[in-house]
Image (tube, rainbow, N blue to C red; front, side, top):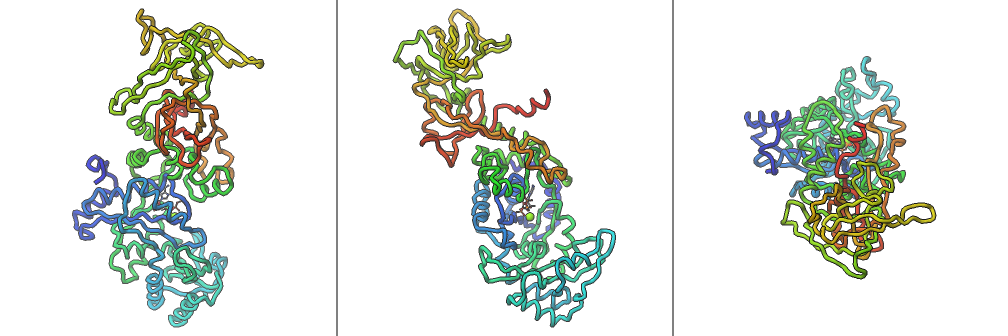
Length: 563
Ligand code: ATP
Ligand code: MG
């Protein structure tokens, strides 16, 4: 049972399943499958499908969910992808146990079924070229015309199909088609292809086959062979459902799964098409499938998104029958909410400005207790070293601040988080006129952040002791696209022109509190006042951990829109 199955909102698929269970359809079984094609890495859209399929199996007593690779397209497929897909599903927290399948496991069975179709005069070998076939296919308003080879004898078809398998023909020379209805208003029913010739090495079956079954034919039969009860897919397959049912009605399969369509997940500021994600990778527009800006599972993982936050998101957006675009801010909020609960708060200065505390004794270090979480004492605490030279954030100082700037300025006093009040007395500039150092004094009476005389300061800023700082690189990520609909039809040609040039920037002289030396790969933190960050799993900075910004503390994009 999933953690919140009892609270799970009902949806139209649950309603269908509940009715089926009431009627004891499928002997009361619920069996789903997640059927990725291993031609790329999984993305957030797939996460929705995974959560749906595996989630239903968890929620119903005795429910099962298979992981099945739809590997009928050997040119584009690779074990790199079958490996990554398994890792991603596991990381999301789901388990297929011993139910890992490959459509290619059924190649022999699929071939035999095709022979049955031929024997029943429900399939024929066609010699037309792809273009000739298309020309005869008709349009939405005009019926198609039969191929001159449509009425070949069963014997001739069996012979040709056998020779197709034996490798006697070149790709495109012959094709096996279902014999359904060239006048059907549904184009998918106008004698669709079942088998085509491909002389390529398959990542699982090697050179054993040179005829490969088409997706529509393979999918329904694979579902039936595995005893799937509810075959959930995205809306674009709605028009394929009659074909799904047709194949199963013609063949001696043991069960007939029900195909149910739901709306795919679309996110604004994001592309969720494997083809486009592939293009970003191969053209070097991102630094790989696991670039933290990618909406892939590996990208989100590297960025610091947790499986819990992604699952929460998939639950929250629910299921519909109509396509909508979800605000990516909803996903980012799920990440924030989850990280808020689980992360330790630490001090980290991304763009340092040196501050010398003139009245602090030279060479001395004071250790200040600081809890890791404001209201979760279980997270413990650490001692922060405080010394004569510290760093603060450049943004926390203004030479000529407006009234509402509650941070540091000439003559102003602020609180250093977990430490003391300091007052800025003097500014030191370089030849270019840039502020390079502040001279301040601290008030030793204000330890812990309060003045005994009751005097108040409005601002609290973070800091790090210069001598103790962990100096490393911090990478700031933002949305990969700066247009809300890079994935829309309108932008089919120019979608890559909307890549946000500010989607990555680095801070190479960040100064972090020393406790972060021990941060582990993928560990997440809240850098106080700045955002959530995790330790990069791939790169390091001269042997030191690199930190990725997972998400800012607040949604700065929503603010921009309202401005
Ligand atoms: P893409 O459009 O990114 O190439 P796909 O549908 O071709 O995706 P598959 O590997 O065939 O990718 O998808 C596996 C499963 O995930 C399918 O059942 C598919 O319907 C589902 N799926 C893919 N994209 C989405 C999405 N954006 N929202 C929900 N489900 C999706
Ligand atoms: Mg697909």
